[in-house]
Image 1: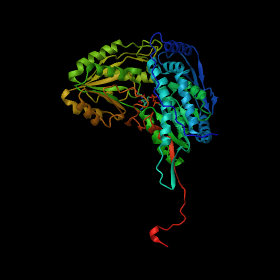
Image 2 (image 1 turned 90 degrees about the vertical axis):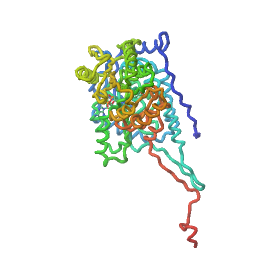
Image 3 (image 1 turned 135 degrees about the vertical axis):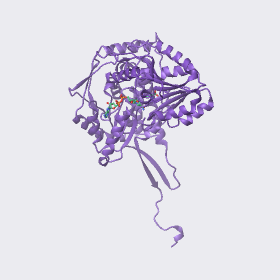
Image 4 (image 1 turned 120 degrees about the vertical axis):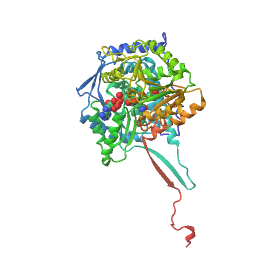
Length: 542
Ligand SMILES: NC(=O)c1ccc[n+]([C@@H]2O[C@H](COP(=O)([O-])OP(=O)(O)OC[C@H]3O[C@@H](n4cnc5c(N)ncnc54)[C@H](O)[C@@H]3O)[C@@H](O)[C@H]2O)c1
Ligand SMILES: N[C@@H](CCC=O)C(=O)O
């Protein structure tokens, strides 16, 4: 068999299709949506490529049409989780020893399958499962997922190429071994791309995986499984389970071969998992890698020099796209008194123009929030704001769950900059605004930095360069992704590596070489060509 040093295809960001009226992609995705809506699927567990149906099922429904069933999924029992672990361990040696270019080819093929034959299907599944409008589905399930797969292959080769110096007489090599054991991927509901990337990035680096998607994303996770299968991911490399998250996680964390967790989701869940790993630490064969990207309380700060229309647009898109259910979504804003009247006018006009309803109607900018739990939580905070002195709802405030979980895009004006909705992650279409005195710019920056436990994304708007520089410095630790004159959402793989610190996560930057480094355990190999056969230093003589 021939061997060579291979140059992988240069990664490029997948262009976003327009879905404008009359385009073929619009017709295709709508037809696929209708056909999927009118069919029913039965999603099994996937362990060693085997489809397992336990008979203990849950129902999958579109959040915007919750009485409709898209089908069922099967919940795992403890024995299935153990089987998934055993399978991952059995598959490990063969997969880890497969040449890297073979692994790369599988995931590059998956990217091209999404870009072509599966694009309409994965977008339609994301519109149905997570209630994304077509633009939000396209930038996530198609483009970001494709970008993760393509760029990760390029980053992998950059890592492998990073080799130590060798002096004369010896050759030093770094071997980027996969972790010894298996990796556990737990994924959130809100991004199909994240659901696919968390197991795939660890697998690309030679690891085998037990993957637990969110119950609210299983419908689109099934399409990911189909794509990975068609791309050639061998049986046992990525094993997929659903069911009671605590039972599944406790079973996984009890395994001595647990070697790493790739988590995205809420902060409290991640902290609990970290604590459990700590409790089990004496049982593990190796120190597990703990990677978690978690919650946010993302901010927009306007300087008095900012353009009011641009600030209002940053809020309209940054807070309300995908109903504010991006970890990066703006949920608190700080606007100077001198700009507020204009920002308020432009923002209210934008919100008035939003249409809300099913993603099947492509005129709808706002669709439903993910599930009843989220709906009820948001409604509670909105009702509380209606009652509280010092909090005024200036736009939205309505909600209705009779057909779908619809929450109106809501703006709360708070007199107290530490009002509860300025500090707590709500994860919905609600933003709270605090209007500050123009002469309190420095104090406001301190407030932004100290108000929340999170540090994920943030944006400042300013036409004054000194103010932009000052905010960049003052907010250095307040956001892992910091935007100047732009909304705080929409990071692109290969352009804005994504992740935050403090309570927002381990900041291992999804979609970058930094993340992939967490899935390898390098071995240093020094080979000496002429091996010494005398212990004496020259000055010791004979
Ligand atoms: N920082 C990021 O990159 C990023 C990206 C996306 C989402 N998020 C965060 O994710 C959250 C929204 O997603 P979500 O609602 O799916 O989060 P979630 O924490 O409810 O669920 C995430 C995953 O954890 C599982 N889970 C829930 N409880 C568990 C438990 N006790 N033990 C083990 N696993 C458990 C879920 O089933 C799901 O698979 C928000 O907090 C958001 O900020 C962060
Ligand atoms: N990377 C996405 C957010 C992912 C979390 O939900 C963004 O930048 O908007």
